[in-house]
Structures are given as structure tokens and as C-alpha cells.
Amino acid sequence: MMGGDNWLWGIYLILFFISIVEIASASSRLAYQQVTNDNPLMRHTMFLVVGFFCLVLTLQTLSSIRTSYVTGLGALAYVGGVILMCLLPIFGRRVNGATRDIFGIQPVEFCKVGLIIMLCATLTAKNEVFTRFSFFRTKTEVRRYWFLLIMIGLVVAPIALQNLSTALILGIVSLAIMFLAKVRASYLLKTIGVLSVAAAIFLAMLFMLHKFNESNETAGNAHHTELGLFDRANTWEHRIFDNRNDVPLWQQSINDENRQEMCAHMAIANSNVVGRFIGESQMRDHLPEAYSDYIYAIIFEEMGVEGAAIVMLLYFILLWRCYRLSLKTTDPLKRLLMISIPLLIVVQALIHMGVCTDAMFVTGQPLPLISRGGMSILATSACFGILFGLSHSILKEEAARNQQ
Figure 1 (cartoon, one colour):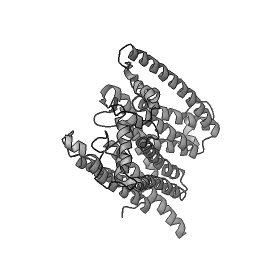
Figure 2 (cartoon, rainbow, N blue to C red):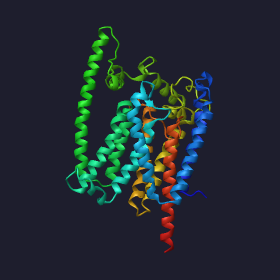
Figure 3 (spheres, one colour):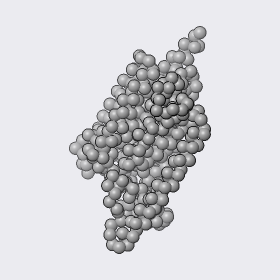
Figure 4 (tube, rainbow, N blue to C red):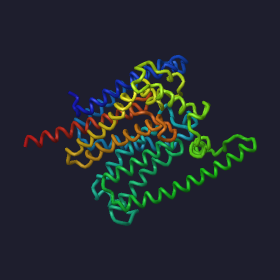
């Protein structure tokens, strides 16, 4: 027996199965166009299988040695992710207007896992650890908080230059974790206040860029300003301040800029509530990134409202079950990890669903464990492996208490 909670195994296996079925359907365009030399389904299945072995390895490791060793995995992922993110602008490969992978690796996935684990380890560390930092000549609680902010900033800042939505997700989840760990409310409120001022300045600068780009376009030039390292600002400006966003989608003509949103809406409309059934999607060959950033729209079209609701419910059940398990342990690190890791997965899933259903602005976020991907699948599988290992340890702890 590999161990772990049966509820978590059930959720993982259902998502695993849905992923294979929907990718087989949504990747038909890739297979037809022969964008890659490999069969898209075989490639995706290979990553799922490798991810499963990563999961089992993580589970067996956490089951056979001290659970606190998970912080070593987190530290390695954190340091490696930060180093690769710093090298990304120099050696990275540009994809869809952003530099997101280096040497075939997406460092943001390392950063996600590493940051969450290191946050939990820092928040549950003993006070004696922070008395060694003489640089912060203040009380231990403040030293710990400054350490947390620096650790978050080292990850979020470089990610924001290439993928602002992922940086926002990590920032929101980090603040939520600190709130759950009962960090003093005054510290969090001050941080939120500073971030609000920074966000206002950021939006003001984007608005100025928007006006400058508009004047360039009026003069007959391209609606784009070369900004070097900060060139992604043109994308953010377009998504936030483009006047065409005020026109409802159903009143717009399909073009290169709104094709994703339009096709996603058409896919959802095609579902006819009950869905067209697996493999019968009409929009999979027209919707860009149907197998990745818009896989939920294809799920909606093929499985209907009920199927889409079930997929959403699976992520909420994951969070609920992990929360229930966290209540069964007295170890603060286990408790915080059991809540924080699924929280990251669920927030990312909700943002993906929000984009597909036009509930929020367009941003590229894969649906965890379902969307086609490489590093994303492996990172999510590793997260499940940690959850399985922690649940195995927690259930053993509970069984030992019941026998006393």
C-alpha cells in the first residue's frame, strides 16, 4: 500500500482520467497540423505518468523519513527557481510574447512550489531561528515578517516581468497563508496599504503608456512602444485600457485579438446545458490554446454544465478534505502545508475557469493537472505527492492516538 488519504487519491485519479480524455479531444488540432513531431496525447500522457512517479517518490520519501524534510525540497525548488528566473531574460525562449522557459524548463513552477513550502516553514519555525539575524535590530516577530516579505519579493518581482497573473496569484496566496498562520493583522494591513499605493502608481503609469500608444497609433505608427525588459507592459496596457473591451463580445467581429474569448463563448454556448459528449467538440479546432489555457471551455462544451460543475467541485473538495486532515495533526508545519498547497491549486483553477467563462480578464493559466503541459503537470503532481505523504503521516498520527 502506498498510503495517503483515500479522498485525495480519488480526486487525483478522477482529474488524471479527465485530463487524458479531454486532452485527447482538445489536441486534435495539434495532431492535424503536426505542430510537433510527437503525438500530443502521448506526450501529455508521458508527463502524467512521469508526474505520477514523482508523486509516488515524494509520498514514499515523506512516509519513510521525517516529514519536516519537505522543507529541503522546498528550499531546493525555491533557490533553483529564483536563479533560473534571473537567467530567464538572458537565456530564455520567447513564447506568445513572453519569455517563460529556459533550457526547456519553466522556472515559475519551481518558484510556486518552493515559495509555498518555504513560507510555511518560515511561519512555523521557532523564534530562535530569527534571533541570529542581527541586521534587523527589532523584535523577533518583526524580523520574521521582514524575512517573509523579502522571500516573497525575490520570487514575485522577477515573475511579474514575464507573467503578471502568476505573480498576482502567488502574492494573494502568500498573504492568505500569512493570514491563516495568524500573522499580526496590523502587519498585513500595512502591507496591503503599501501594495495598494504601488498598484495605483502602476495603473497610472500604464494609463500614461496607453495614451502614448494611442497618440502613436493616431500618427500612423504601431500601437506599441519598445520598453526592453519591461515590454510586457504593452500587453497589460492593452488588456486593461483597450476601449474595445467596453463593447460586449456578442457585438464584436472575430479578429486575432478577441478570437480566444469569442471561441470560448461559442464553445460554452454549444454545450446546450447537457454537453455535446466526449470528443464531439465543435470549437476545439478553432479555439487557440484549447488544450491548455482554455481547456475548461472544451470541458464545458463536451460535458455540459454538470460536467463543468463537477470539475470545479473536485478542486473545492480537495481544499475541504485537506483542511479536515489539517485539523487532525498537532504539528504546525503539517497543518499549514495541508492548507497552503491545495489553496494554491484551487486559486489557479478558479482563475483559469474565470478566464474561460469571461468572469475576469484574459490571462494564461493552465487548469491544474488537466491542461496540457510539461513542468506544470510535474509540479502539480509533486504537490499531490506532498499532500499524500502528509496525509499518510497525519492518519498514522491519528491512529496512534486512538490506540492509546
